Length: 112
Image 1 (cartoon, rainbow, N blue to C red):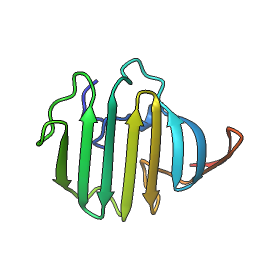
Image 2 (cartoon, one colour; image 1 turned 180 degrees about the vertical axis):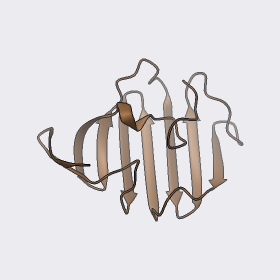
Image 3 (cartoon, rainbow, N blue to C red; image 1 turned 30 degrees about the vertical axis):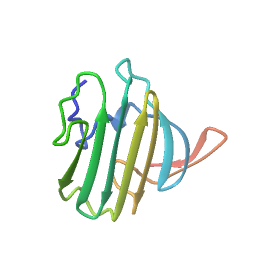
């Protein structure tokens, strides 16, 4: 898997299976054969920090981590972390990578 995916991160959000969510935060399963490793991206306004320790991923500016200044939408806070097949995401306000969703007992009551 290449590090650069849609949304400029290591996770293809189109493949995620939503497990639980409350408004702008969610937990999902990533059912992919190349889910080994870990990655993460934290952004506050236009400042982002990334980490990626996945087999086959290109190096970031500081080895497995790196800073970035980019405008990735109108979110004040954007967080995504992935460890093997588990993905946790949150954004304030919600955005394309972290849409509004509410689940109860694994069933989605509301999802965009």
